Length: 175
Image (cartoon, rainbow, N blue to C red; front, side, top):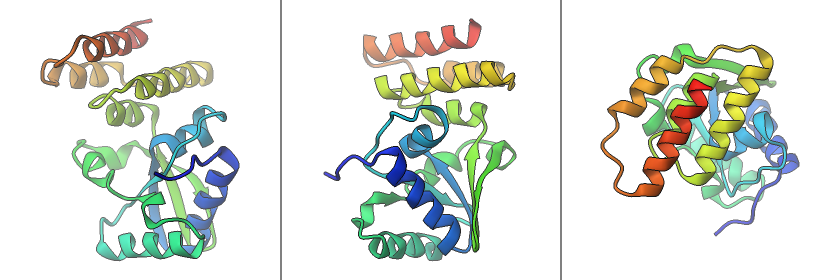
């Protein structure tokens, strides 16, 4: 297991992606939360997806991890599977960082919620609450109907705790 990465270390890693790696990248997961929503948040890896979806992008991430003295699993591109399953995801990203060689994007609040709701761990729910609070504070629209429809389309929860978290997310959207 990797050591937790704090906000400062995460910022340096994301900056390195934009400075050293060519192309466009999408930052999701706990690293994004720490840099965008909740500065005290830590995580064990940086979920970053090459927008081209190529093996070359994955190889570049692995090389960057090694160059930064990180274990290769610290830069994780597996989230691309989940991102690409969401219709219209490319219209739901905004530039987050720009560097000498590349750009790092983040999801809109709506896409962020859509990415979190399938697993919806306790941490995911806390991240969603932070996203909803930020969107409201900034006056940024969330497509609540789309998120509710995605929640409703999920298979029935296999445990009461997950069902309760889903209900809590729905309540956040209705508040």
